[in-house]
Image 1 (tube, rainbow, N blue to C red):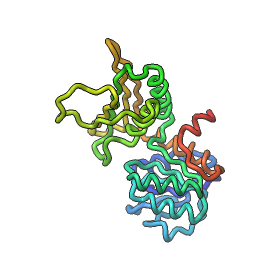
Image 2 (cartoon, one colour):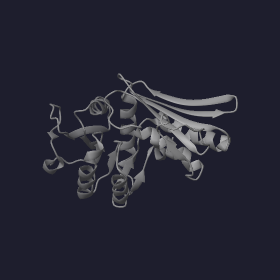
Image 3 (tube, one colour):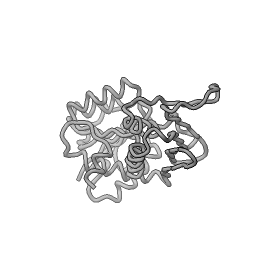
Image 4 (cartoon, rainbow, N blue to C red):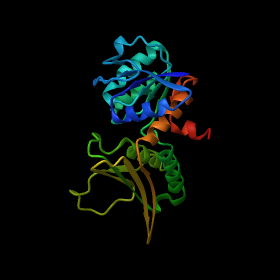
Length: 251
């Protein structure tokens, strides 16, 4: 049985992970960390300092501000960490990569297997279409999401940009610019409203034709399923930085 410490257990994603883990035969949530203390079948701590329960993996679905607590705890216990939050600063990302030299870290902007397949397909399309098609990304999320654009939209943009050797710039706001759209840019647009779980579109607009690749998450369960797949993958991994591509490559 893989024993998991769930950071952000009292949130909506935490609830989805707990429900799915309860149906699992090989994963058990044995403790939680959250600033909001709720009653669960496992103990919940307000910070990492008081945790005495043996755990095999730390799974973080809280927010980016918790990353240093996660990394510090995982390093001290010499256990893997899964970081499923977004909105990290450049310094936080650098520190995550540094920690991956000591422990296995699974770090991704989106835990959905489908969104990572979308990313792979978009890269393949960019390789085929080259610079002849303009690229735009549209992401839609619920009205409680704090960061914009989404980490997934930036992940998509970065992967597409890698096809062009990182020579494209990102455009987030056109309303104040009266000019023709330059070729070497990727437009990224955010929509916030209602209870939208997560929708992403990659638009390739060429001469008299448009190709659209899209993914729509119907519930948070898809991210919980990806998180448990990451738990199974990372528990016996060597120190290093991993993401969903490592799971997809084993499918």
